[in-house]
Length: 346
Length: 108
Image (cartoon, rainbow over the protein chains, first blue to last red):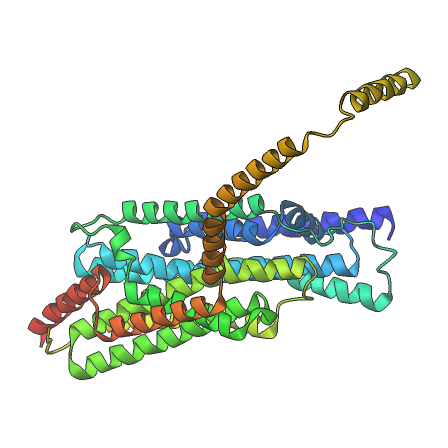
C-alpha cells in the first residue's frame, strides 16, 4: 500500500468518525429524546465500560486497537486481536447497560419522592440504561466487524507480511497494577453512580442504600453456584468455566425467582412475591457483575496472550443472552410490582 | 590488576599460615555440640509452626474444600430464599405493592 493511499484511508476513517460524533451530538442537542436522558446512566456506562476494558487489556493493546480502527494497517494476527478488543468493548457496554438498569431499578424502588406514580416512572426510566448500553455496543461492533473483514482480506490475498508495517502488539502479559487500576476505576465508577442516583432521587425513609442492595439469598446463590459450577467444569476450560458458572447460576436464579413469584400470585401472598422480586433483581445484578468483572477479563487475557484464538461460541452466547434475559426479567418484575392484588396475606 | 592479584595472594598466604593448625579436638567437639543443640532448639520452635502453616494453606487451596464451601453457600441461599427471608429491598417492594393495591381499591 502506498503512503498516499494509506493517508487517504486514514482521512476517510477520521471523517466517518467525525460525522458519527456530530450526528450523536446533534441528536442529543435537539432535545428530541429528552425523555430518554439519564445523566447518571450515561456517566456510568461510558466510564464503567472504559474501566471494565482496562481490567482485561493493557494500554498498549488499547492504543493499537484505536489506531487500527482509524485505518492503520496491520497483519492478520494484529487485526484479529484489535477486532477482539472492539468486540470485548461492545460486550462490556451491553452487559453494563443491563447491570446499570438493575442497579437503577433497585435504587428507584428504595426512594419515595413523587408518590407511587413517581416510583413507577423512575422504574421505567431505569430501563434507559439498557438502551444506552445497546447503542454503545452497536457503535463498538462497527470497528470489530470492519477489522474482522480486513483480516479476512489480508489472509485471502496473502498480504500479511507486506502489510506488517502497522502497529504490532504481540502477546503482552498484563501486570497486576494494570488490573488493579481497572478494578479501582470500576469500583469508583459504581460508587459515584450510586451517589448520583441517590442524590437525584430524594429519600423518604431511613433506608441506607447499602442495606437495600444486600439481599443475602441472592449473594449466596450466585457466588456459591458460580464457584461450584466453575470447579465442576474444571481448570481445562480456563476462564470459560467462570463465564459458564456465573451465566448458568444467573439463569437458574432468575427462573427460581420467577417460579416463586408466580406461586406468590397463586397464594395471594405479597411477602412471597416481594421476596421473589428482590431475588430476581439482586441475582441478575450480581450475575452480570460476576461476568463483567471476573469472567470476561480472564477470557480477554487468554485471547490477548495467545492461549486461545478467540472467545468460544458458548461464551459469546451468554454474553448476548444474559443481559437480554435480565432486561426481560426486569420488565416482568416491574409488572409484578405494579399489578394490584385483591387480597394480601402477611 | 597484577598488583591487586599479588596483594590477594599475599593475604591468602598469610591467612593460611595463621590458621594452619586445626582446633584442638575437645574444643571442636564442644563447638559442634553447641551448634547442634542450638539448631535442635531452633528447629523444635520453628518446624511445627511452618508445618502447620503449610498444611493450613494446602488445606485452604484444596478443590474439595472450595467445592464443599460453595455447595454450602448455594444450599444456604436456596433455603433462605425458600423461607422468604426478609430484606430491606423485599420489604420496600412489599410496601409499594400494597400501595398500588390501595390505590386500585376505590376505583372498583
